[in-house]
Image 1 (cartoon, rainbow, N blue to C red):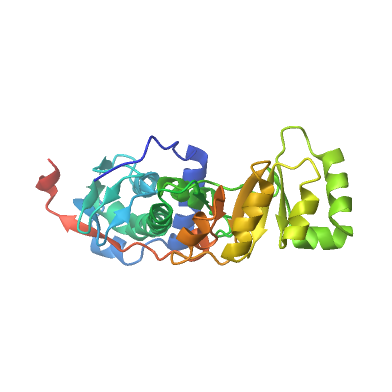
Image 2: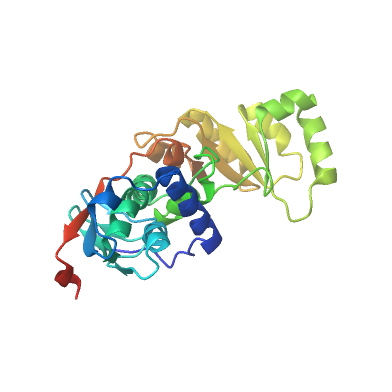
Length: 292
């Protein structure tokens, strides 16, 4: 196994709120009508969480919180940390506690792990594909509603960077803004008079002519939208280090290396969060004495 540098953990309120909503969705008004009749209230059990395929790990806080929500005294033993890689068949955690709680929280815990590990694993593949270039891989706002903070955390676990979190923390002027405002000059002149001194301004461009125009204004970054490789390379030369450069639009694992070789600083990939495949993991029952 290998690990990234220390990753800032998710805020507790974000984790607890997400788990609470997920458990409420699963338990509804009647609770677990399968487990409760079968398992005595005082029964105790032990289980292991196993990944069935190679993975970059993300989401252990959420899994642990799901079990603790139903059994505050459950023992959750992490055998890896978020940001680490694990081979197929690796046991990443063990849990001991009330059997009802373990069985009821199982799907919620695995859903979070499957989603976030899937994002982290896909991100790690993109990061590996651009190794040796200056380009960094970043996510977008194409996230699952309500889960953005969690999914962007998973991107960090995969070695990627976070783009803006929402409409509130950075300015990104897109083609529709420019069209609605009546042109680049109108849009940027209005922006600069309102944006605070701590707010970064990025402008999306589709052509080299647009790029040359926006470089006349005090902006921080430019996004090259759906440009082909030769145009991207020329655009990087036109920018000439005056602003941060970002490429976006239809990026895949097959094309990302060629995009990186144009010299762009960032490559934003919506697929990291809108199209990851969930990681295959399972909760496997163990003899209670195996954790003692």
